[in-house]
Length: 58
Image 1 (cartoon, helix red, strand yellow):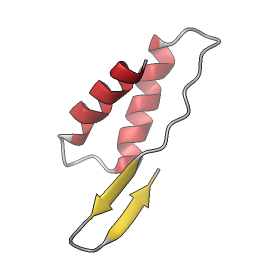
Image 2 (spheres, one colour; image 1 turned 180 degrees about the horizontal axis):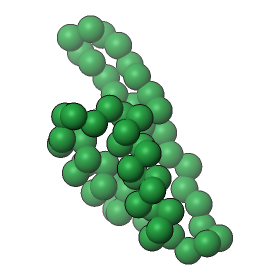
Image 3 (cartoon, helix red, strand yellow; image 1 turned 90 degrees about the horizontal axis):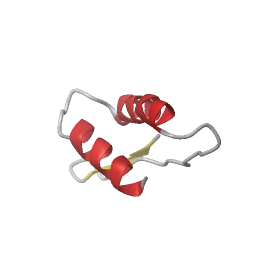
Image 4 (cartoon, one colour; image 1 turned 90 degrees about the vertical axis):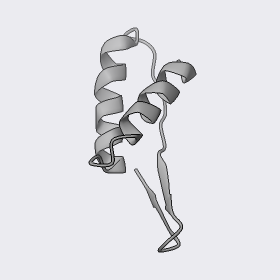
């Protein structure tokens, strides 16, 4: 499951039009349909902006 999550986040993050909120929503929608009913994953997504020295999370 970690490999699937990693791949999905990487692919979505390459498209700069997505916010971290949008990435997490799309990731959740995709995993919801791929995972068995009794399986869940806890997710935390961080974005560091070195220019502004800020950390955002979703």
